[in-house]
Image (tube, rainbow, N blue to C red; front, side, top):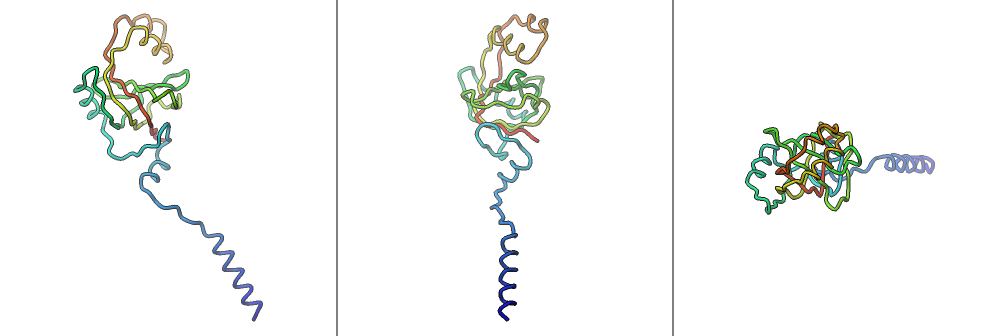
Length: 167
């Protein structure tokens, strides 16, 4: 009788140890773990603007305005030296130029054409010829393309504190 009780106690202990404890299921956390790689601050994939909605917001901004926003779009390009900036499609043949807060994180250099969500501050800036040439060089553009930059341009800019890139 003692053996039966001892064996059943050992069996219960073994089965209870092998049962995996389930983590609490937070929908945002589960979605991020399954669908996105996180860069910078951890952000959610909820309440995100489309690229068209973001373009509308940019059109309403003046050069000194900033807005805190989150939007999702396709990555058109990434800095090929470090991954320290990227461009995102806004539709209408326009792009948002995204940098990362405090130069605190980078994105993979092979992230082009993936979907991403960025959270941070959107603003409009005027980009000098020198800056445009620097970014063109970082993007791996030809010398002819770099030399063709001769005018400052209005840029839809974004300072991201967090980025999610689809896996």
